[in-house]
Image (tube, rainbow, N blue to C red; front, side, top):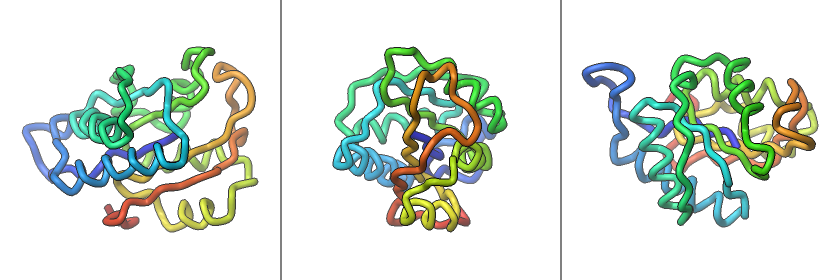
Length: 168
């Protein structure tokens, strides 16, 4: 699962300190409810240390009624898609469903990097329209996380929040 952080305030003392606005909290909680309804809940989560990403995780997990402590990863704040892929490769072998919560353009690029070209058509169309705040892509992966390769995952489901747009 790949999620872009929810809608955040435009300015703060630092970019890293930007917090979610109310709409962002609601959208992230809605994404969690959607994930539960789809039966796709993570058993391991990597989350950027930026305030908005951590708050996104907290709202998502609350909406999903999920009690899971995330692994905060400082590198996700400035990661490119290749670095984010390395984070996924470090997931515990016992994890069946892994989630990463980070920032654009990296999260959108990560989804495209992993896409094997066999995406579910509706999901592919949603991704083609952009990856707005609170967007979640569920990708199906075969094999071990440590062996995850480029173009080795199928985009199965996509959630775009009710207030999301490609410009967010």
